[in-house]
Image 1 (tube, rainbow, N blue to C red):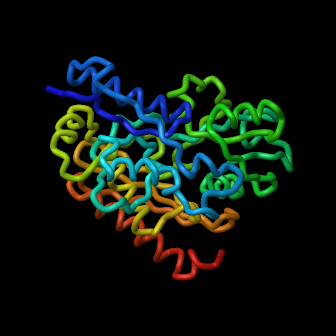
Image 2: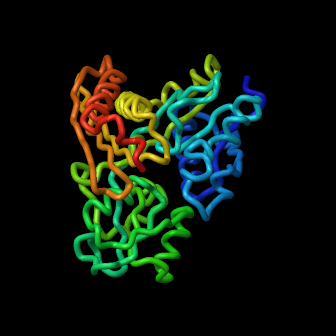
Image 3: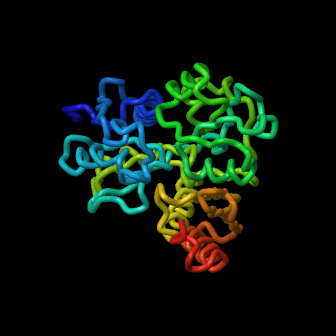
Length: 308
């Protein structure tokens, strides 16, 4: 008999808490457990504390996971719930991504005050984003726009937009939907021309490798197709040595026994971009991601990642 609650580690933002509660609800339903069988443990990460600088300047994606992963390693947590796109491609020794929930809409949402679409923004309009990928794609589409750094959680960014600090911003549609804020979206950006970050829209659960009790608890809520797609996207990102310093987009889709991956790399100013599409078997999704990365490295040339 379970004697203590299963401890779920999470960041404290509204979106992170919504994701932790979704995970808890799925576990409750899968196992017929009451809410008090779980404890949501909020942990403030370094990435939460630093809000005035780009992540690329202060350590990258791992800043949103470090303290939570320490809690897992030290046994203070049983599992951790993350936004997949926040996860570094190399995890600390002894930890693994043990489950993925069904992926939400992976597209980027444009939220415009000055105009409802990117094409409709006036020349020189100020658009805020914390993502190098979004910044590069915006500059590729509209080099005349003034793209500025725009950090903060979803509600705070929407509040800054409403206050007129910027004319528009971009957010993940998945996050807006999980918070019930999708009505704020004025344009959904097509996956083909504005591809998302690897992992965007997917919730992942991290745990200690070999923890059979937790693996058994998580198994019923794991979504196979999302897991396959995210494994390919993470392999693609890892083979490119992707970090917050690198504008990289990647999106994989499973159709029966086939996985298709669309990958893109850009320079931060958006003036140079390379993309590819690779198909392969769902039995070898890592190879699909690695092959897409190889193709892009070959096309971009050896100096692509070192000249900016």
